[in-house]
Length: 331
Ligand code: WQD
Image 1: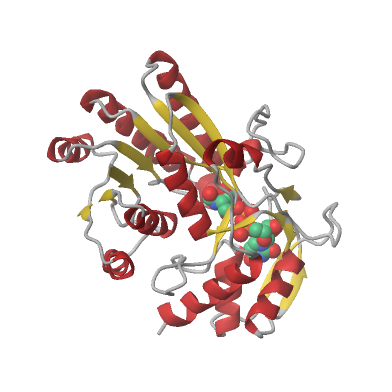
Image 2 (image 1 turned 90 degrees about the horizontal axis):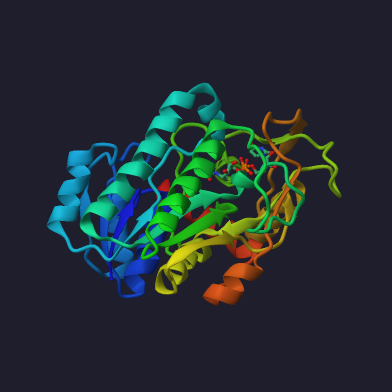
């Protein structure tokens, strides 16, 4: 199928485009490069030995977006473009609501206008708020702690209501847990601008000596070792989850947790990284980070049952692949 991937040059996007191309789909990317680098396109081509089409556009610009739909027959869209830093969203709520909601609405409007019925949306486990773990798709969502999370809840609601009013629409809402790692080639991976917010790129920069030590945000959580628990999933497993959702998409709205179903604490992650790569990670325990929940991991039975998809790569592979990218990328 001809798939339009918004945000396809980004961390999740590039890996998803690799998986789509390797599954035989044609890929058209729309990305404004605000949080990604144009050389990633050649690395996607290098990995897959396939061609792809790229438009440097901001999809909140309706004219630019419609031009893409006028230039290609599109079978489905995968909407990944969006601002995604939790802390930043608390400081800049308007830019998060505007960018993330307007982009979803304009993309849906273009799909309606040009008869595109398949819509895969990048959502997040953040939508569960402070629910009891493991998070299950049928759970009632609780308020999230930040505007970023609210934009995901609102986008899910907008797409759900459109699908209810248009029974021919096929919508998949993919709730990501914690994507980490990199493609095994080391050619693409997570390279945040500035000091990383997320833990894995922070750890790899400590391992590289670019940062002095990891600060562990809190060791007084109600968890076994007191540190925060998360469901880390290899970014290539996540990418393959998008292909599975697209290949099996049916009319109506379908929600899938994309995680491993396994919770890992910060201290366990550090230990896994040290074991996988033979590198010591110095750390210091500091206070909790506002907005963090104690524990977040997925019930993954729905994606397994309906998509035949499960995450295959273990935490050591995630740590090895993340470290390889940090080394190769920073060459
Ligand atoms: C993981 C764990 C921290 C950094 C966020 C978003 C989520 C998704 C993924 C977009 C927590 C601890 C972290 C550090 C630490 N983003 N930590 N020191 O917050 O679970 O999820 O990123 O979709 O929506 O909320 O990821 O990697 O920031 O934190 O101790 O320097 O590591 O407290 O327990 P998080 P994270």
